[in-house]
Amino acid sequence: MTRIFSRRAFLAGGAGLGATMLPQSEATGAEVPAFELDEATVADLQAGMASGKYTAQSLAELYLQRIERVDWQGPSLRSVLEINPDALDIARKVDAERAAGKLRGPLHGIPVLLKDNIGTADRMETTAGSLALVGARPAHNAPLATCLIAAGAVLLGKTNLSEWANFRSTHSVSGWSGRGGQTRNPYALDRSPSGSSSGSGAAIAANLAALAVGTETDGSILSPSAANSLVGIKPTVGLISRTGVIPIAHSQDTAGPMARTVRDAAILLGALVCADPADAATQMKTRRSHADYTPFLDPHGLKGKRIGITRKQFFGYSAPTDHIATEAIEVLKKAGAVIVDPADIPSAGKFDADELIVLLYEFKADLNRYLSGLGPNARVHSLQEVIAFNDQEKAAEMPFFGQEHMLKAEELGPLTTPAYKKALARCGKLSRAQGIDAVMNEHQLDALFAPTQGPVWMIDLANGDSGGGSSTTPAAVSGYPSITVPAGYYYGLPVGVSFFGRPWSEPTLIEIAYAFEQATQVRRPPKFAPTAAFPTLPRASGRGA
Image (cartoon, rainbow, N blue to C red; front, side):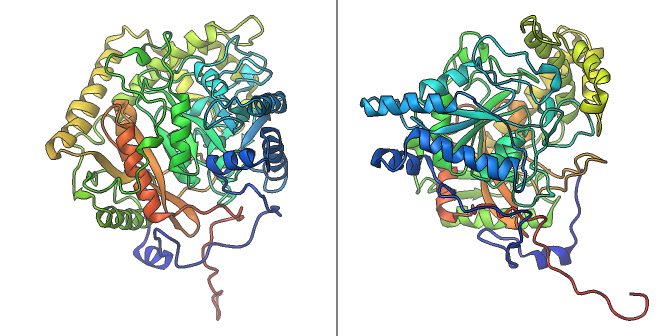
């Protein structure tokens, strides 16, 4: 749904790259204590451990205290569903390795949060936010979790999410789950954290951990990253294993990093990249991966890059967002990029209906496959049983919205159905050959650019998400990579911009995003304001006031 902003409201808002005309509200919804690790990067934490100021255990303890004070008390963000009961034991183990001279890499001892649809064979749950999956613990770690453990990361806990990764209802509320309740945005507590990686976004924005892993089918990493002034990377489908991750649709699903800086996101991406024989997408012959993406962090990386501005469909829905994106384009020019404007995607908006058909068919097939593999302790082993559980536990699971997507998916046939195969083929053709590939080939581009989305909407449990414009769909449907970076604020509400392009072009996108980030330095930590920092207007006086 397009949101309309008046010209007067836009001019008064002073949306911009570095700051807003009006200062962000200093008022907070609750007292938030100072935190010594506020905005600490992976490099900062590693330097602290190398000097002896910190240990992995003391870092984990500090973040756990922060979660207790800010997430579960104080502003009550509800971004972290549960703490890993083994986190401190893991931290002590990697501390012992450090003392013995064994360092596994840049994530050694670094606390990381996982979205609660990523399977871990430990004492944590893996539920996608649904009460139906409580107790249905997987027998094995998702390979991406195994990769993080091998890298020395401390898995600190699981984050809340839009239940079933926001594929349950047509009127869902981002950041709400039956298990975790409503996640709130730390920049304005009455605003949505967006989703579906809602808890991962809010938690990292609020400095509840160093890094988090989200997942995306269409916008679920990029949107909450933009809404929480974070860097989020939606990789090429097949770069990161999806095995052990509760699915929506195999043609679009991927996990990816969420962080406060491009450097930290690049570090986490390298640790997540591992091939998986059980995930055919990671076995593609065209796959190009790197164990370390930090060599692509070049502050001069915009020089000579050809960047296309995708205006059609992705500008015009929000005047403040357009203003911030326009200032971002000027930064790109000054940093030496060659701007092609416009460089519209010919098929933009033409495959949305087909995308939904594909997601509904694949959701049923993929979720049934996942659920059928759960052990006898699981309450549900099929989509049909999930639907029945939700009906039975309606007061807890469906107090605000229903399960329309689930009901529609359950009605559909197998993946051999002609309607599915036709929609899948159209999605591939329109998003790739007649979409991103077409415009990039025509203009010989290194990347495409668009605002990620507008200022985030109010939490509305009565009506669901109001949303607005977004640029996530072309990269999502094509399976191509995209990265969002903070670009500005509108009355304290974060706005991000995205760079996206060809498959396996993560190195180029990281180079571009890092140079943009270094040229702008936009991100600032949240102040847990009760609402957006709009000006207080004088009360009308006189008769009838």
